[in-house]
Amino acid sequence: MSPCEKYQARGRKPWKMMLQFVKIIIITVQLVSFGLSNEMMVTFKEENLLAFKHLFLKDYKDRGSTYAVYTKHEVHDHIDHIIMRYLNLQNVTVGNHAFETVNGVVTPLSLCQEFYRHGNISPENDSFDIDPHVEKECIYIYPMNSMEYEVFPNDANFTLHFKRLLSVNIYLKVKAINLQTVRHDELPDCYNFSIVIEFDNRAHSGRIKVSLNSNAEIKVCKEWTVSNSNAVSHFLLIVLFDSLVIVVCLLSLVLCTRSVCASVRLLLEYVWFISEHHGTVSWSDRMQFVNGWHILIILSDVLTITGSVLKICIQSKELTNYNVCSILLGTSTILVWTGVMRYLGFIKKYNILILTLKAALPNVMRFSTCAVLIYVSYCFCGWIVLGPHHENFRSFNTVAYCLFSMINGDEIYLTFSKLRERGSMVWLFSRVYIYSFISIFTYMVLSLFIAIITETYETIKQQQKQQDGMVFSELQAFITTCKNHPTFGTYKLDQEPSSYL
Image (cartoon, rainbow, N blue to C red; front, side, top):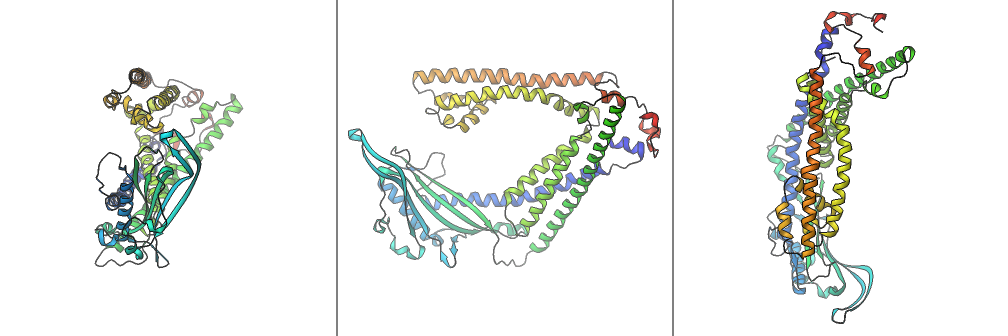
């Protein structure tokens, strides 16, 4: 029965339905509030990463090409630039950056090189003698000794072995405070940035690629004072609202759990009755008693409660793990909004989408399994054959992205144009490869996938046009023996007559 029919039959008010609609509103408001805070955190981290690249990488420009150096002088010059920028960081940066200190001692800059243990390489004689064991050598530079390092620290017994050099890594520790949250009446967070600048020479191709990566660790500020701000009252309102979300989700969890337990009891009674009078009950009929919507709502409630507790801890600066909290709240919001479709399913005109998805899912899964096998085979083939000649096929992941884009009509011209100047054999193979892939997946696989959904949709429409009461299973045949309408009043009796069993 629908909630309206239950109200007509037994006078039960649809508390669970009303609670779900209330829950949608408050969870969405909670997610938007947390999303704004999360957005400020992400923006701060991304802009700091860009700032570090401009601070420490010499002549860095925001461009798509790979940042690289090609001469020994450039390598020494860039390393010296990084060292001097770090030693004079607080005099150079326009941000609120500072050195990290541990027990009153500033964390030093670490300059490390990795190289083969032994290497005697003579390209002119086409000969080499190398020991592939990798060794690592590091020196540490403290900010208080900045005057000692005006040029590359050759005097520190640190020499780059370019013939057998694999990489040069520079490790920095920088601290900062995200002050933009103060404008939104939120307490700022303190950040510890672990910066790694890598000079990658593993290919030994004459081109050393330079990259900068930053890992941000969010911590609670030790001492803080915010004058003339409503941060405390805003924090209390947020905590009260999150507590309201937790209470509503707990009520929803209890009601849905009670419904699942009632379904299990009804299943046991039905199995006992059929076993006594008719025989066994099939698993398909047993699964009819398991309401997947209730399971979905229970899962969303658990995720929302957990995410709300983490959000309160983040707001109170006890925890700083934004990623876990955002995953929990985002997933729960998807499940909550999807769970409302259950109530639309009681209306026949809206129920057709749910019935179509439910009926088409087995065929779609079987069809997708076959399509994935062909897709993976094309990914491996493109990776091996076209990888050396095209950047979109350089790794297995990029091949998968590129081919998926081709199915949707993207990247086709760009892929063809970049393979135009290759050898005749590669050119011919790339044409056969791409043409066959587009023909199979765009014209055949995608069309058949749509045809499965369309055929299922037409079947559901035809079934809805047929007369009511059509029997498709033994359970439905058992249910149709009861002809009483919810408004008859039979369901309002304390005990059901034995004639209905």
